[in-house]
Image (cartoon, rainbow over all chains, first blue to last red; front, side, top):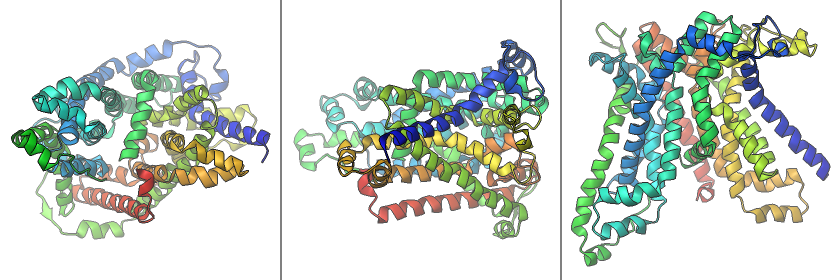
Length: 273
Length: 315
């Protein structure tokens, strides 16, 4: 194969792959910004753009309320998950107590279980406690679901540190807590940021668990509300597209700013599994 | 997953007089893990154990629980919806595992051959589908597939191919592949970044040597890239295999399993039986079956690779 043909092939593959990834996203954004709800061939009439659909979808779909619910869940679940992962990862990866390997194996095993598997009994547990349809149940469940990856991730981060780093502080007489605060946590800060970004994405995007746990409208998270919204307004294509843009916006923004962390987390996380 | 041996030698410990502090450290270490373990036990381990138990019972979710032994499992074998769901799961695995690995490999190879600045940009765009909520992906793609106002049929009409326009998700034959395309769309960016990171870890000398030997692009891919990506391939297979079964949000919001049962998958059937139809025992049996199948498949893949010495590449 000659160089020219090779180059052509390279760019052809790239063009097709990028088009496949981006075209639906651009299409939906264009429809969301369209001034006139069109019938047929929506993409060809996207010349007259407006933000009005976003405002209308926001009001009609009550996305203010559901984005608020999602924010409350994320506001509690993300920091707590990250903190508990940091603590456990430090215990397993840096302090390496007896059986820490077995504990880590337990979290890694939990990573393989489809979480859907325990969802029904969990619903009955919360129901028995009278806690279904509360933020408490959602937040606690989200934390538990994210911890297997978080613990595994932070344990890997601490294990990759040179042993002397932690030992030196310990020999100097620092308590394990003091060592974590002054040496451990600052050193693994990049891993913490990545974990928080991934946790935010997974918690924000979660659908099945809130679908089962939440029944009242005021608690609905954003993914739930767009699902209910589509049941009612599917025929209004501009409104639906606007709703998609609204719900995807927070995570896509986080991705725009932290894309390196998102990609590194997804890749390294998968590789180390 | 290997557990590194502790670097602490007993002699050094005694000399430093830190045997006592090590014991205190042990307790300390356990305390750091306990909160996470408590959440794990409450939210995951206990409920999954309960699911295993419930799969041996007949229960509607409210009334008395009746022990039925393995009846739920034997009933699954002759249950037409379950066999349909399993068959559909195999098709979804093709779209979630096989195709993304091929496309992901091709795009990763291509991206590794262009300038760094462009690579970062394209990588960001290609990974975008992986960060969008599956619900939004499903709703968005419904707008793409919508028969009358949808983007796809509109596009086909605009380029004079309106004869190809179809009710994509409403057609019994097309609904499953159309759903599969969305699964591919969600998955290949992740596979691509995985392979791209792997290619960048392959020693440049190997590529140089291939060039000196006069290998073209294809020769290089066959003799350097693919062997160098053995470990990433394994990871991609395991991750996409798990994702092939975790598609509830996509199916629920795209087709609800329809038309008929054309796109029903195991997780959707668990939801329908467990939540909608009050057949908790049967739903649990499906859930446990998927998990066992999945874990066996994953362990099988790991075992195969380990036996072939794929571990060296993992180092």
